[in-house]
Image (spheres, rainbow, N blue to C red):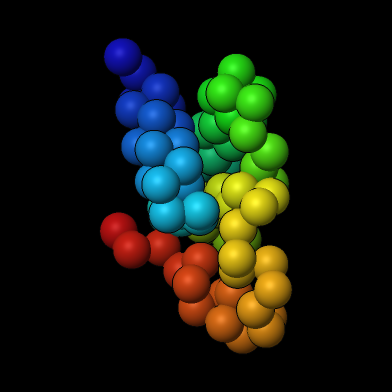
Length: 83
């Protein structure tokens, strides 16, 4: 299993159970590959997600996550990477 696959799987599992996940990934190509893989995992599971790159952080949020109803400040705090 590649580093991209391990990271995508970990983010996906966290987002699936906690509605959102974030990790610091400094390399732009790696971040793009992780985001692409997470979208594929979500599609395969029929779960809607949004992914984003915020500086060096990659975030994934389920479209049904409660965080979408929070203020922008609360959302930023909740989406801060825990790594």
